[in-house]
Image (cartoon, rainbow, N blue to C red; front, side, top):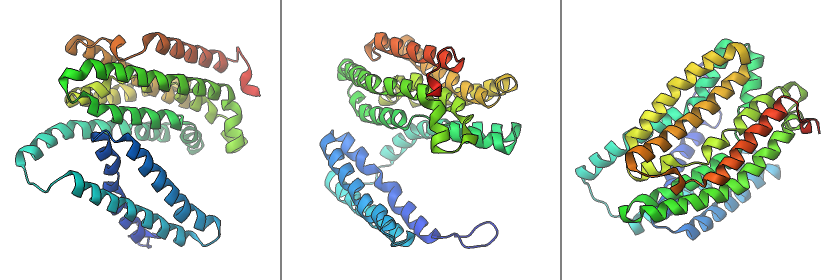
Length: 334
């Protein structure tokens, strides 16, 4: 592997080998999810994380150099790949079925497009900022345009874990109740943490980075509001019921509206307007999917959303954001 100018990319061959081994190894968690073996996911996660700490982080900290850490990473990745092969041998058989392939290509294509579009939203925002603002503003935006990691990780985990619960039509009511209970559990954990981050956002960026990035806290505060859309899961029901095209159309509409609203808000709100547009459109997308579930599938929001708690947390978070942002309450200077 080489750079565009012809210079060799450092550790390029190791990178290719890592990508080759790590990409399929991610299937381990999904196999366990399909067979409802949640305890084995915990064991697998604990073991692989421990191995990464021992073989990747420790050599670098102890001064053995980056190359030893890279070899350690390849060792752990190879271990995960072998684990995957063992699971495939245990739970599957080699069989070529064109009917199966065709069915899953039809199901996967809209989902792949939806994932690609949703994942590219922040990159599109970055392109708009880089085109409309000088480089220093782009840097401020990129450092601030971050969600709270726990929200993304735990919400995605719940979404993936619940997909298998909607395979059997006769158990939808129970699956909806389970989704409601588990999402409420996340709300009790993640909303209070997000609210605390709102209060302390002004000291986080100067402390972690430098004083020059203090302005990034405004963008970060707006991105914290994405929790309002992250912790409702209408898309989980649709994907579980194989309504992939609905999710895809929502993602296409999301990108179009996001770009449009971003360009409208930039003249008055600057880089913060880009973040506001993203938050607004994500919320609109989720409520559109909720409406589809209600009017087309006859699934009421109250069946899978703890509406009372969700409303209290969402309104509280938004109100506190407005008060803090307008300096009506001044916890931000602690």
